[in-house]
Length: 361
Image 1: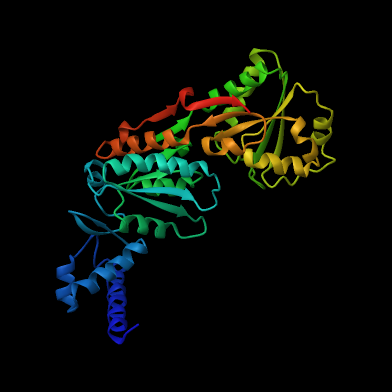
Image 2: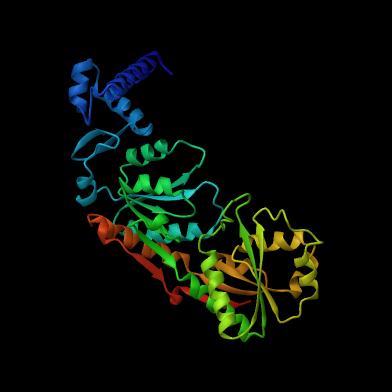
């Protein structure tokens, strides 16, 4: 770094510290003076002021709103944020850093198609549960995001923080704590019911579900919040047609499974009319490995849900194939429609069976 650049960087940091001190001491109570005013007061150029404010935005201390000015975080008038139609055409696709589900990439492709038609820009943002939430907010503010598509598991506390400042859509999962936000979800009960119907039509009389949960969870929390609903669909079909149903639980690390587990012996002795259903497809093979049953997997009837791109690589079995691309298209359209709409007009849109293809392979 040249000496001039180093001096400018030091000035920006010094000014950032002064502004932050004024915020902490209530010298500024809501709105921060404009760039021109600050540059004149501290006798620095506007680029230095802009850099200082950018640091504070990234740290979540302030927010910048086009047409309104710069505000201390949490003091920007909510009614303006709620009813003013923002024109940035910038959107964020927020997903957990721990999430490995590739179907969300197809969902991103679908949503990006719609945003591109509006000459909009979508930014892929990974949420890190170990980082400061204010940094996430600061990044979204700096990007001047108009709306956020929330995928995978994002804590409800984070969603509530986002809800105060951005138009948001919960994709693939219902909103937490009955929050009044838009959501795009699958008809998960119908997924389970239709998958059971396909199995039954192919001679299955006995149904076993493999239910994977978060380890060391006091409430036996499922990995997929929609998994219980899908299993309910299977149970309902079994009840309607008087078929055998039996559940098995394990944490996602499969720590309680071994070749001596009762499930292993049951699978070895199970008739060909038995199917084993897991809505965590990627855990199916590791599950059979832990049970010491990999050699007999080709003889076992397996059922699960997969996305379109997984279909060519799936093991022989029965599947509900989810059209995640079209889900992304619908999520983007719904998000765009929320801009400028009062938050008490939000709704949940359910992906009906026409977006779910049930097949065997």
